[in-house]
Amino acid sequence: MNLAELQKKLFSVARANPPSDRVPYAFEKRIMAHLAARSVLDHGALWARGLWRALAPCVAIMLLLTAWSLFDTSSNPPAPDLSQDFENTVLAAVGQDQPADSAW
Image: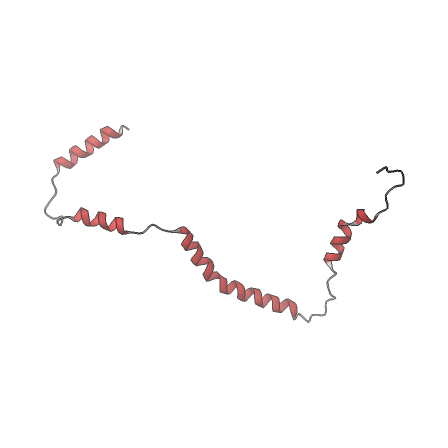
């Protein structure tokens, strides 16, 4: 659709219908001023506010789980030290002897 043609049609319809007396004086100016005074929605502020509100419950849950894991008195045997297993696996090739015929 041609925008210039649409604009001409809208202007002709607006000229054909004069404003009625039911509309208060300077109503459109008050509406436009009200719209201009509205603040723009700040999405960053909304996220920040939500994250700060979630901070306290997350910290409380973290502390409860930490205390539970530290003071767990179950009869299960202690878990193996995974850091030692990982280090032994990664460094397994280093500990092997080099073949005698390699020329460095």
